[in-house]
Image (cartoon, rainbow, N blue to C red; front, side, top):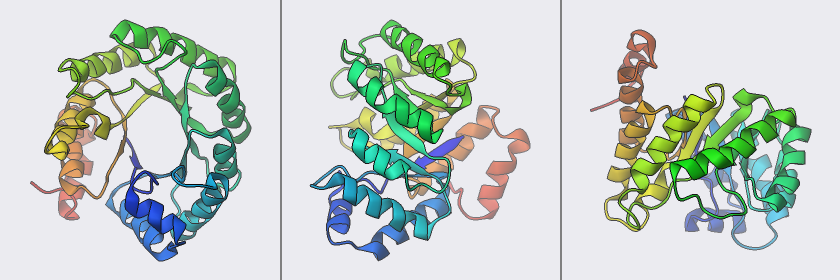
Length: 264
């Protein structure tokens, strides 16, 4: 199970302000706390505001001063992705590539050059997928295309693209069924998602995010972009992994309980 800590993202007002004011202490403390809470990779996003390339460079250096964890370089801009990747001291993750022609042509060379893990969104020039079949069709472009380009299957993290449940009550099950289908077709490829999209626009969002995470584990989701400081979320993840047979003799669960990180 891979956890990407999502909190250093400039779409969050506090992070945008911290980047603007060069508040190293705040950002470094947030990076440390995410790693201490169980994040394996720290997402860094500097897309909000101006001068993204310079902000990304600064942010990558700041986070790497604080933690030894790898980084997930997260941007819609290929220039910002390259700026971040060029400074990474460990094998990074790119968030993200799609099967859209322009995005593919811009991002694939970066994934190859820096030998990065990559989040691959199930989207192409036809737009947002509407069905499980749509996602499998796009995955059928992305996975073979990445492998042909020299990206190992174990470095590919397929994102089935989670849509808001408040828009359509079937979007949750659609994403779960897509995850199961992708993992069955490509068993060496990982599945990842950002949980918060499913609850967008609805009250008590954390409750929906937590429930969706547990359900996702049962269909093969083995990586999440989430808030690791949500202790209830992390506790439920430990329990879900144990119940899904992913934690031999429940050793991770037991260790988490003993460390005070897994609580009812």
